[in-house]
Amino acid sequence: MVKPFVPELVYVEPRALEYPLGKELKQKFENMGIEIRHTTSHNQVRNLPGDNHFQRYRTAKSTLVIGIRKTLKFDTSKPSAEYAIPFVTGCMGHCHYCYLQTTMGDKPYIRTYVNVDEILESAEEYMQQRAPEPTRFEASCTSDVVGVDHLTHTLKQAIEYFGKTEHGQLRFVTKFAHIDHLLDAEHNGRTRFRFSINSDYVIKYFEPGTSRLHERIEAAVKAARAGYPLGFIIAPIYLHEGWKEGYREMMEKLNKALPADARKDLTFEMIQHRFTKPAKRVIQKNYPMTKLELDESKRKWKWGRYGIGKYVYTNEEQEDMKDTIGSYIASYFPEASLDYFT
Ligand code: SF4
Image (cartoon, rainbow, N blue to C red; front, side, top):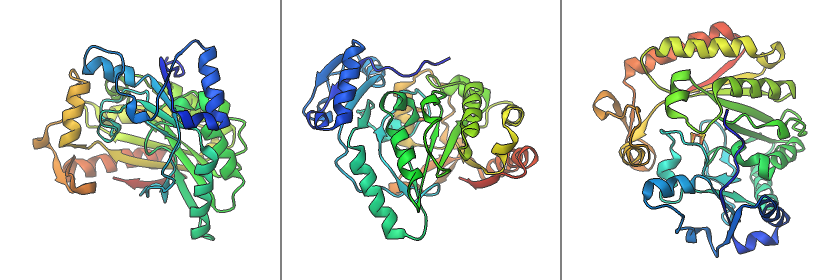
C-alpha cells in the first residue's frame, strides 16, 4: 500500500510566506523535521541532490515547492471541462506513460500554490462571464491534486467554495486513495469525484507510486457514501496480452463494490494510450526498463495539440476497445453515462 506523500525536501518561495497557507505549510514541514530551503523562484530549484539524471529525477518527484500562482488566466480543458484550474503542478506518482514527463520538462518537482483565494477569485470571473450557463473546472490537468492534498487541504477549500456557487462545478481525478479529509467537505453535489482506474496489469507495471485498484475502489465507495457524484476514467486503455479479461475483471470488482446510490449519477470516460516522439524519448530516459510498448510502426499517427503528432491505436483496435469496454459499462452500470472515448 502506498503511503500518503511526505516530501523529502521542501523549497519555499519568499512571497509564499505572505499567505497564511504558506506560513502554515512551512511550519508544518519544519515540525516534521523535513529539510527546508529558500529560493527566490521555483526556477532556481536546479541543484537537487543526486549524482545523475536518474537520481535527480527521483529526488524531484519527492520535492515540494511552496509557491504562488502568478498567471491567473486559466487554460481551456476539453473535453472534460471548460477550464483547467491550477492548484498544484507536478506529481509524486511514477506512471511511466504520464504526460507530465514531457510537459514538466526538467522541472518534475511538485509545486503547490498558496494563493488559493486569488485562484478562486479568478474562477469567479470565469463563471460570471458564462452565467447562467454552468462552468466546469478541472483540477487535474497539471498534477494529481489529491496526492498532496492531505498536506495542503487546498482541494478541500475549493470543493467547499464551489459547493456555495450557483453556476460552478469542480471535477478532479486521482489515482490516490488518501481522501479521508475530503469526506466531510460541504460539496453540495457540485464536485464530481473521479478515480482513474485500470487493469491490474497496467497498474502493476506502469503505475508505481500510486494506490492499487482495490484501494482506489474502496476510496470511491467512501466518496460515494459522502454523497459525491462519482466518475471513473479508464485511462490509459492499453492493449496488453489478456486485456479483455483484465478490463472485465476491473469492471467486475467495481460492480461488486459500488453501492446502489452511487450508480444513478455516475460517469465514465475512456482514454486510449497515446504517445508522442518527444514523450517516448523522455519515458525511455526516466524509466529505461519499462515494458511500455512505444513502437510507432504499430500505431496510427494523428495530429495533436501544438502540431506535435501523437501515436494512437489503429482504427480497428480503437473500435475493439470501445465495443469491449463500452459493453462492460453498459452491462454492469446501465444507468451510467459514457461521456467520451478519445
Ligand atoms: S498519478 Fe497521474 S499525474 Fe501522477 S504520475 Fe501518474 S499519471 Fe502522472
